[in-house]
Amino acid sequence: MTKAAWRMILLASLGGTLEYYDFVIFGIFAREIGQAVFPSQDPLVSLIVTFTTFAIGYLARPLGGIILGRLGDKFGRRGVFLASIFVTSAATLGIGLVPTYASWGIAASILVVALRLTQGFCLGGELPGAITYVVESAPRKAPFVCGVVFACVTTGVALGTMIALVVGRVLSPADATLYGWRVAFIIGGVMGLGSFWLRRAFEESPEFLELKRLAAASQEPIGELVRTHPTQLVAGIAGQAVTACFAGLFFAHMPAYLTSVLKYDPATAVFAQTYGVILHAVLILGAGWLANRYAPHVLLRVGALALAAGAYPFYAALSDHSVNIITLMTLGAMAGALVNGTFAFVTADLFPTRIRFSGVAVVQNISQTAFGGTAPLIATALIRNLQTPVAPADFVIACGAVTFLGSFAVARYGGQVRGEAAASSIA
Image 1 (cartoon, one colour):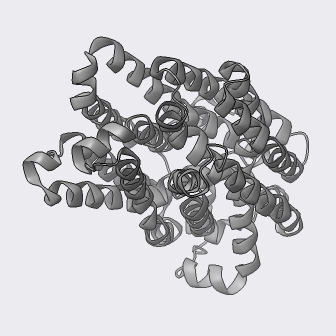
Image 2: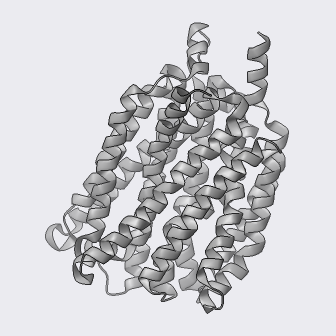
Image 3: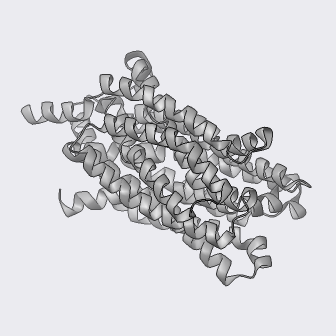
């Protein structure tokens, strides 16, 4: 691969980096956001409302995925990329500037919800577009380049946790609670606008250009997708279940869970998660490398089993403070890397170029909404209803079982990416 190709792949990853940055910022500052915009006499209720707002953003993602995926398959990947990153960044910046509940009352809460819906709509096409682009740019190395994308995306989480650490050290505790979360969102919005500027040089996917040259691009990709690939849609959604759950819990829910529920020292919690996320990003590269040499769906299956089997011991050890938190984050990062380093290629491999953007977008957004965006809310509700801090393990086990079963279906119906590459080389 040329330097120009690698540059385009890295540019394609920037929007996903912002998405995961937003993930962790919402989690780290969930308590402060709740106090500022969704105040309540019961701190746990305030936290639940905040995570509900986090989940609401995901409700717009399937619609955004359908509309943006259709546009991407019909007119090209580049325009969708540019528009989605710009609007998403503006919404992130807006959350950092929104007035408090004390100043605007319920209007402040409604504005945050509206901005989350806007983010969700645009992100519905952002990461699916990145997956589609890199797979079509390097089909023979597709598993590895998908791993590169998600290693870069995961650094958005590490960046978020590091910024939270800096904010906590530079500002006094009172100021950090008052506006530290605003600083983090403003920085995210500015970074997103910067990535939009860099993406102006973005080139169209080579495979899509070939489709346009042959006048073979789908004119109604969503209709074609539903008619011709319904089984692949279900298989893809199931195959991403545990990946979405892992992202929602390990990235978004973990900071508030460690400090508010388990009473870990905030600095220790943020440091441990930062370490876990950075290690996770490195291990995703390793998983992508393995996926270029071994069947990706098998690695996905092993990762799903590891997460399901390890969920209860992991949460039990965290809640008891019986095992060093760094050791636990290491184990979590290792198991999660097997699914996060393989699911993107496994999903893209289910669909041909004509409808790939739409297929990946529908699968990604339904699965991420059902199993990822709701994960912090479900975990918090389970803790409250079951009266045990180990309760989130139940959700991980359920999602792991769904992905394990789905891995057999994706193995049966996959084979599009490399099959198309082989056919193209013969032609």
